[in-house]
Image (cartoon, rainbow, N blue to C red; front, side, top):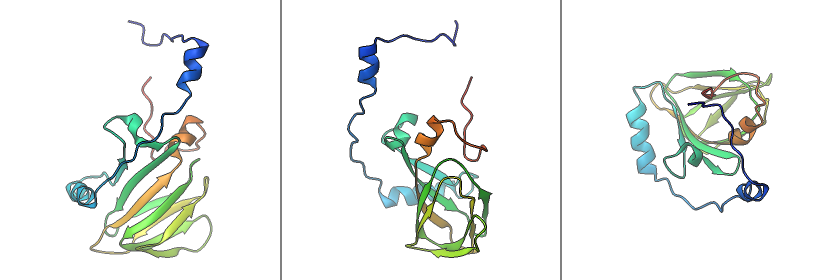
Length: 161
């Protein structure tokens, strides 16, 4: 079977496909996120995408936007990197340091809100020896990746050919 064969749609069907369905409300309970984080403590995974459903398409919560919970383990460092999407981080718990571009590092903690514009080099260090640095991460990653405009592969999963 030829898995590279394209498909055809009428212009009417194509135009209809561009109409976005309304976003449905969703709730993610803290107790579930806490349990999930604890189950991941011994793994290399530190980011969990919040999704509408169990499909990958469900990870785009609203057109072009993604939301995830990210935990940086005690004492861990996320090296500085940059990419084509912006982030809005809301620190849920813990404390650490944020680096932004060439600016001096900023101490961050619970309740802080951090805007990282696209193409701004950024990295984190968890200053605690005992508590994860928990961050709600809102971004336009789906929108930016659709444009295929990135200069490194940080956080990217290569698409299958």
